[in-house]
Each structure stands twice: as C-alpha cells, then as structure tokens.
Image (cartoon, rainbow, N blue to C red; front, side, top):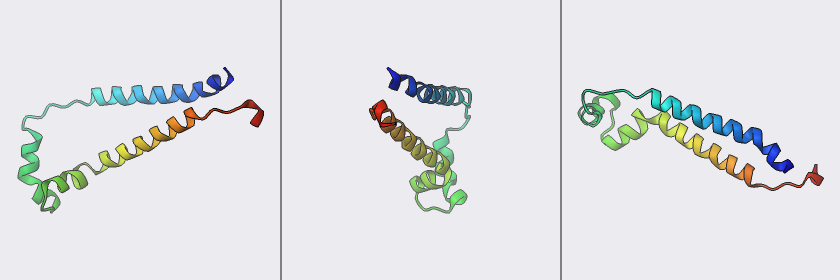
Length: 92
C-alpha cells in the first residue's frame, strides 16, 4: 500500500501530461485548402534541396516531430521501468 502511495504523484503527473498533450493536439486542428501531399510533391526539391520526397519530409519538414516522438518514447519506457520496480521499505 505504501508503494502505491509513493507512486501516486508520478502517476498523476504522467496523467496530467497526457491530458495536456491530447487537449493541445485537439485544439490545434487546422483546415488546409490544398492537400498537403500536393504541396510536398510540388515544392520539396526547392524547399529542402533533397532529391527524394520521403527524405525531405522526414528529415526537413518533420524533424522536430521526429525528435519529440523519440523523446516521448524514451520517457514512456523510463516511466514503465520506474513504475514496475517493486521496492521494500526495509531498503531505505
């Protein structure tokens, strides 16, 4: 029971963070007149200088998205590892 009480603040922080991300994502929906893929296919070479559209999208247009996805995955793994450890109160 004590270990659950000790983990409660971490669970609340993670839950709050998840809710804020969902609210932020839902509130930033934009409508685009022209489909995005048309824009990417027409202008990826002049915008980025890349010869491949997939490379231009992944490494130039969406670099911050890629970095933050990797960071979020890392934080999720750390949280799962931290919450899955069972500790005895005698150790402290």
